[in-house]
Image (cartoon, rainbow, N blue to C red):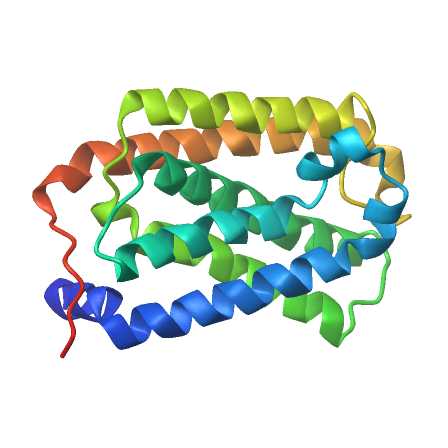
Length: 201
């Protein structure tokens, strides 16, 4: 079963499909943030659209795979942020529902698409060539992003029903980033026995 799954993950046609899905999702994500970005100071712009930036990182990783290359730092950035913000968006939408919001089809689209973000990061975990320095740099990025979001108030807009809990959400987000780093660190330690070569047939 594992061998068949690995074959699918390395298949060029599957990689192209995943590349296109992530590219389109990234574009849609930046459009989604348009209203917030219009109100954001230019020097904070790179740190506001968390989820589409995570999928952009992974789109670049997939592009490298298709070109027969691996970029460990980008793999680390993609894996950690996909897990962090994929889970974050799922929890925020479900929490809004628990707080009294009516979840419509758009909310559920966000839930399942962001769950898919985290899942794809985990599926490719055995193939990453991440070293400790890459995770250190990724940790700096994620913590810096949290500071911008919750100290300077640039976090993604959340439901009005959750706004009273913004400090708790910031605390949760920080530890979610730590969890992502731990998961990727453990996965990277076990990945050296797996080779990633794109299959063309």
